[in-house]
Amino acid sequence: MAFGRHLFIVLLLLQACATNKYLTEEYETALTRAESFDASAVLESEVVELQSVPLALPEVILARAEEVVNQEAVLDSRPLQLSEVRRYALENNLGIEIDLFDPQIAEQGYLAEKAKFEAILTAQVRQTKNWDVNDEVIESTFAEPSIVIPVPTGAVLSVGVPFSETRMPASDNMAEMVGINKTAQLGVSLVQPVLRNAGTKINLASIETAGLLMRQTDSLTKLRVISTLAGAERAYWRYYAAYQLLQVLYRQYELALEQRAVAERLVEEGVRTRVELTRAESGVALQFTRVIVAETSRRRAERALKRFINLPDLDVDTEATILPMTPTAPQGLDFDRGRLVSMAYSNRQELLQNEMQLEIDRITIDVDRNQTLPKLDLTFQYAYSGAAPESKAVWEMIFDRELNGLAAGVSFEMPLLGNRSAKAKLRQSLLQRSQTMATRRLLEQAVREEVHNAADAVEQSWQQILSNRLAISLAEKTYEEEKQQFALGVRTSTDVLISLNSLSDARVTQIGAFLAYQNAMIDLAFATGTVMGNGDISWADDE
Image (tube, rainbow, N blue to C red):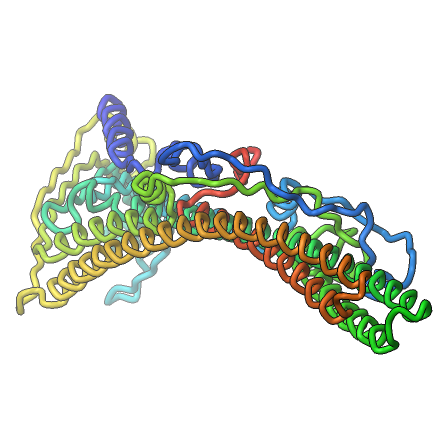
């Protein structure tokens, strides 16, 4: 019994030695959370914030261009915040729902491999009949229950209780007797590899590899979730820009109508010729066309956003109109590029996956190097035996330890031609690790490029916003002056429409700059392995 307790303690210690840092609870938690991008943590210096010029948001947007232009309709609208887009995408997006199955599948594979040292109960029963030269029957019954215990050292320990009963026919001089012989054993056998397949490092390698593959799956799932959330945010800002663009162009259409009304009044008063009215009507038609195109773009962007959030009452084929309630809030940012790159190195899942692949390659090399060794096994057997005509006497002999047996030996195996297969596989593993290391250098270079490109885009779009604000202010001033000059008869309707188009272009360009800024911030967050927003995002199971 003392031997059994000591063996159990040794097995527990061997299992404890199998811990890998990637299999700890810390990594499990880290791979089910995405940190929010904190711009304040990577700023180089303070930047004076300028007040933005927000575009007016109407309370209701018309669902179709003809309704926008000609009708008044009560629409089925749905206000939507950007934070809700993130939450709905995480809860309802079909892509994320599919991706979240992968960690569960990988976990079951890890648990299956982890159970490789589970003890096995085996049993066999055999009935035989043999006929001797006198055609007499010799019957034999054999049964052996046993427990086989794989050990992390590579050994296989088995405990068995074989039992047999043999019935022989009576001899001529002892006709009244039938020979019955019963034998039983309580035996322990151990086979322990010494070279190939020896040691916990080799025999626990498959479990460690399965755990690392599970963590790689967690990391890949995290990357897909971050990518999906970034796509949902881009869809929101594209829709926001399309929504704003429609409002701007519809306002330009209204201004064109006002210009037509002024031209019509002046023609009726005889101040201007009818050609001015024709020019004004041409401007109205042009603005109307732009409104139609803008409404089509808005509806397409709306469907893309609906697909990401995937709400039952807001499917892609519903007519409900989304009202984007989170406006843009751009600000000037001066980033510390070195800290941005460090953040990316810490958070990018591609680098973490590569790091774990290097660990898998290391384990594979250790195993393959071990397989190049000869096979040398130590064998040990010890048994308590008993033999008697009666079962009771047999078991009494076993427990009295009257018949004991001990056997020990060595088995050896080695390929004759130098184990070329194992050595080739080892070289293959070494090359694989070299390739993984080269891939890491490429990934680090690509990450640095993405971070710098995204930071440049943020800074550039901010400068575009500042420039466009001035352009809008000047275009508005020019338009008002052209209208006054037209009323005085100095300018034609064409001049007014040109200034109106310039104002429209400036406002449209500003919307594009706002969209570029938001997309650049999303790209920067993605490049650093984080997500936009004021809080971290978690998709771990509640259990």
